[in-house]
Every structure is written in structure tokens, then in C-alpha cells.
Image 1 (cartoon, chains in turn green, yellow):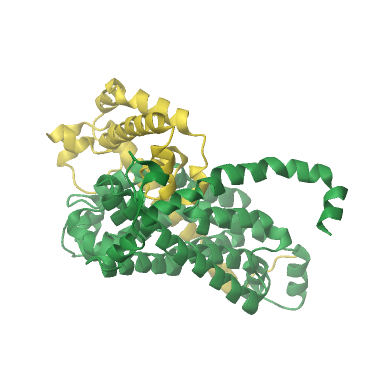
Image 2: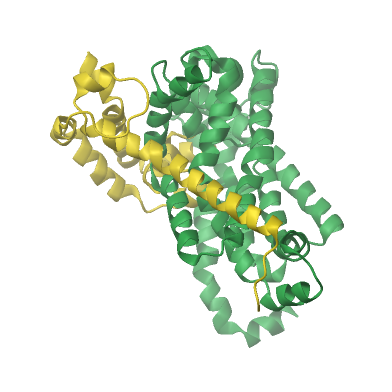
Length: 319
Length: 150
């Protein structure tokens, strides 16, 4: 079967070869490096020359005083992201879709993309400035009768700052994929609905939402597959030792422990643990989605999404 | 298709437009604020409280400081030099493309260690250091208020 197919589509297979080579050389090849999670890696002795230590690093991590806090923070930030940041672009896309005035719609879209193109470092600089004691957000808080404080020193405020600034930066950009999905909905469906007496809310509910459901589900599956990852760059730029209680996540801990203190094996072990959890989660989410909605990764027409899923999700570790 | 709108739809449309305008304001204002602050006279700006609707005075000295800093052109060169990888995809839409590569080398996955510690060690490590410093310098631009106070 495969041989027959190969003979028939020789050239297409040939075209796929560079891609295959790319993945083998740059993604699957370096995977062997993961064995340092089970070794006492020292750069001088190299990956293969270092001595084996078994599961020592994993034990160290799980029995670490901070393990509970790190796991809680990581999962909480991701759950909050899922609740607030994930639906935001969907809602924005639906609202944009209801705008009648084309030019106004385009203007809103363009404006909402802007923050995405600003470097994260700059965004974090702005967040520092705005949440400072004499910053603009405190001016607003005071105007409403609140009390001024340096917000990034308050453990309770870190998560809202992180989530809201994340939405602010990415809501426009992330809505693009939903807008693309919206544009592929058959206009005749709307005309038929109008004839059937459906108002715009009903149209949204029964045509628009089902139309973009596959996109939503696929993106949700991939989001769940990255459940143990938090963009550590942003947290490293925002946090300080006063708010480790809520801000310190697994990846930032690994960064401090692993790279700052040059404990490579330890960070590799934690990274591997993260990736395994992500891998299990994405498989479970995908399985559940296939059962519940018949939408899943690894469907022919959505193969382009597979690559992104691989990139973002469980190959995080391996690449 | 004849568009006939009910009262409810009209109200919705109005609120939708108001919401979109608010969204634009919320998106643009922080950026404008930075622009205004960057050209304001530092001594006036430091004493100012509340919203900034126009530059307070006009001074481009802070930009002069930035361009005089030798780390900035170095940082840009390094950015150009190492933007070949797919760091952008790995970190998805969460990061801008510019700094993701640097973050990639700062990140904590085993592959980085492999990258950094095998043959390309010298190349990667040095350029990483330099770009990191470059970015630090840009970072300082945004903290220039504090610097000027000092």
C-alpha cells in the first residue's frame, strides 16, 4: 500500500524530504540531549561522558519545598488564561463581525494589532511604569477612592496584571484566526436564517458560533497541551522576590535554578517532567474532543494546525 | 437583502461601536503615553501626576542618550544576526519576534543546553550576552525617568 503510493507520488515525497530532514536534524536529533536529565551533567565531560544518577533530579524537584507553590502558580495562571484570555479574542471577533461599517471595522482591527508588535521587554517596561506608585493606574485607583501602592509588590495583584496585560497585548492579533474562520462561513446560511425569522443574536448562536467551533476547539486543545508552560520571559521581567508567592512558576524557577546556577541536569529534569504532563494533557484533550465533538488534531484538512500543535505543545522539550 | 433593524439591534450596534472606540482608546493610550513621556522635559514629567494628554515641554535628549549608547546598534546587529530560527513559532503569538531568540537562549529547556554547550558555544553565548545587554539598554530607555532622577 505504502510502496504503491510511494511509486505513484514519487515527486511529492521528494518535495517532502527537506521538511523531513529538517525535523530529523533539528527536532528529533537533539532529543538525545534529554538524557542529561538522568545524568550529572558537567559541560567538561559532555553529554555522553557524564555519570548517570537515575531519578535523583526528579526526586529533588518533587520533594523541593517550593514544588507545591510552583505547581499551583503554574496551573493557576494557565487556568486563568483559559478562562479570560482564551475567550477574549473569540468575543472580539464576533463583535467585529457585527460591525457594519467596513472602514471602522478595519481601523479597529489595525489598532488592536498594534501592541502585538511591540517587544515584550518594552511592554513590561510600560507595565512597570503604569503600575508604579505614581503611575497612571494608581491615579485611576485613587480617583475611585482606592489606595496608592506599588502594584508589582503586591502578591495578590500579580495575576490580574499578568492576565490583563496579556489580553491587552494579544486580543487583536489572536482574533485574526477567528475572523478568518468567520469569513469562510457560507453567506447563504445567513440569508436562509433571515428568511426563517432569526434575529442577529440567533444568527450568531446558530450559524456563526458553530461555524468557527472547529477552530475554537483545535486552538483549545493546543492551549491545553501547553498547560504547564507559562511564558517565563514575561514573568522574569515582571516579578521580584516579594511576589514569588504568586508569580514564581516552574519555568522561572528552572531558569533561576538551572541556568543562573548552571544546574543543567536539574532544569532538564523539570523540563522533561513539564513536557510529559503537557503531552498527556494534549492527548487527553484531543481524545475527549474527538469523542465529544468529532473535532480533533490529525485530521486531513487541518494538518497545517498539526505542525503548530507539535511546535507549541509536547515537542517544546524536544526542539 | 433588505436590512431592517429592530430597536434591540440598534441598541446593540450602538454599544458595539462604543465598545470598539473604548477598545481603541485603551489600546492606543498607553502607547501614546510612552511617546509623550519620551519627548517630555524630564524634570517636569517627574513631578507630573495623572493622565498625560500632550508632551510636557519638548526635549529629545533621551533619544540622544539612546543613540549614543554603543550597546543599542550592537543589540540591533545581533538581533538581525540571530533572527533565523523559529523562536517566533515556538513561543507563538505571545512574544514579539525581536526578543524571542534571546529569550530562547535564556530559556530552560535541555535543547538550549545542547545548543549552547556543543560546537556553537562561543558564537551563541557571546551573541546572547551582547543582545541581552542591548535589550537591557533599550529597557533603560523606558526607565529613563528613574535614570534622570538619579
